[in-house]
Length: 124
Image (tube, rainbow, N blue to C red; front, side, top):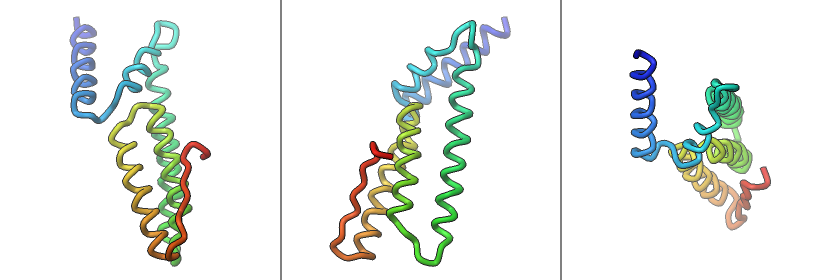
């Protein structure tokens, strides 16, 4: 009985995340990976995502702490987070990354004049 209630709560919570745009269809597809043979597959994917993003954020902090910030390096790291967010369906994170990449591009242009920062996240 308790397991049924917990499953219903999890379904409602996941639906609310989807309805609020925090996650997208990709997240729902990842949930389908859960099986009797690998019941914790989704949890492992999310854990890996979190650990990877934490590592990248640590890199970003070290770049930001430098006296002369290289916005192109920041953008490359943010592209990595954006790609990982796309893979797992973290919609809000993907949108935040896109906005940060645009801000880095603008700061880079401000710093180096008309030189354009060419970002291709698919090559990361």
